[in-house]
Length: 246
Image 1 (cartoon, helix red, strand yellow):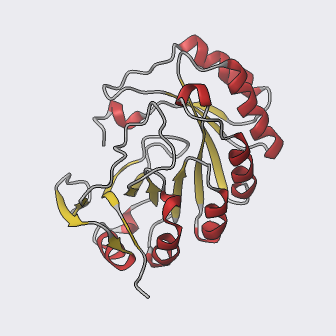
Image 2 (cartoon, helix red, strand yellow):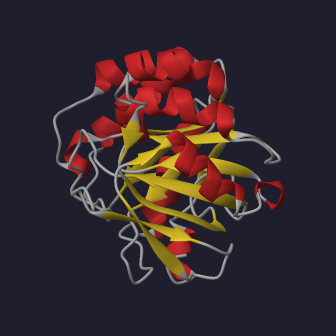
């Protein structure tokens, strides 16, 4: 049987721009493809012919590798990016959990970072998470507000996903903007609280120019409301866009 393969957009070394570990140095594996189509998403939805690979960490000089790639090929590229100098390896997308068979083969080959495997996910594929859960260390899970993302509600999937993820070092990202519905934010807070006292990052939608689409008063109001229910609530925009889209 042929080994599993997966299409990737890029493999590179940079600074984590979102969430609790913002500012940490990571190796990013950006997978192609997603099961959602959020209105604010800034990642191309197509499957590229080539994966961009940064041959020297931080250089922003890329070589092109033909898609799809095997786990052994990806592991070799990552080893050349000096894992020991990095906090973790970020599996991001797109949605990396669309490629669970590939991840089951790849992750055991990824050694040497300081904190292991960091999964960034839209939190809608609990069955896929269950398959790879023993192999990941940190989970950055989105809860998608239907009105903000302009998608069908995913409440049931999010609840099942978070119940699984709470056994790991997990935090939740809630992407909001000026038009986010208070009732949807309340529902997301209740969902989190019903699972546990899990850290929450309120993330204003950030334009490619680094401007946030949320006024400070609303951010403070929603953070205050969340702090009535949760211990750790932070407002953090997408900082990599301020730094020039690292």
